[in-house]
Image (cartoon, rainbow, N blue to C red; front, side, top):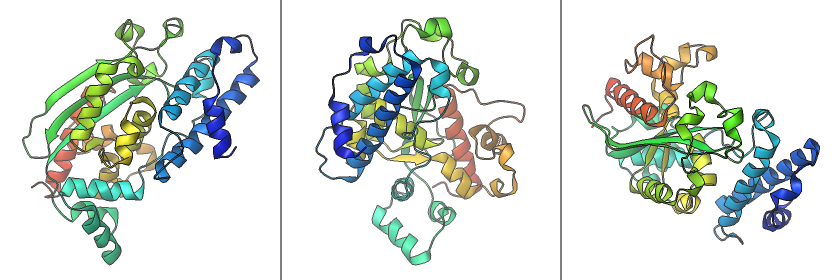
Length: 321
């Protein structure tokens, strides 16, 4: 498939009723085509200053793919991961994040990298962190943003300062299609969200007020998330206006997992099986969680834990203003 094919595929009229009764191989082939087209469209939109299509085309195709996945059932959706979940933020995103944390220009940070061949640890530790940020976390029904739904989202705003208290805290449960009432909420073994938590709630994609508030919040301050590439990928395919604002530089994601890897010296001496950069393990090492406590896996709870752990890490490294 090339870009022209992707645009043509995304532009076709989707009538899900025509797919009832077709075999699983056909549905899988359609999903594969959808996700390949999404990958090409996302790449083109991100890299081309003047793409030949609006981002609504991408969002519509992602919605269409979710409807298709609902027909296929939760087992097939979780069988493998879509290409449209990023594994990490780009190098340019890291530079922008460091600049935002340290209230420096991206140009100065980039020049420092060129002049010193600086590692991420050197970059994050080169100046104290300061300012006000949004912390955010989501819980979902899939690892793939073009297959699943956001079922819980939590955020708060906080200054990176010793003793700071969060403001503007929000915690929202979001609905999913009714067919999941019988099968249960996917990934509930991780986030423990049950049907009773989301019954009657508006789906995230249909909640215009929530979307408007969230987009405004993410434009107001850079946002921090543990494995921010996950939230970034999901918001790109779920939050109206996010991709456009992100491309224009009005939204800046910062990955606290990347900060943990760069600043915490314990990470390099721990085994991969210990998951040293997980929020839970990092929080336990920094005293934000007791050794026998577990991460809650709910948006606002994990956001608050992330902020407390990050501030403890920065304080440990003398990197708070």
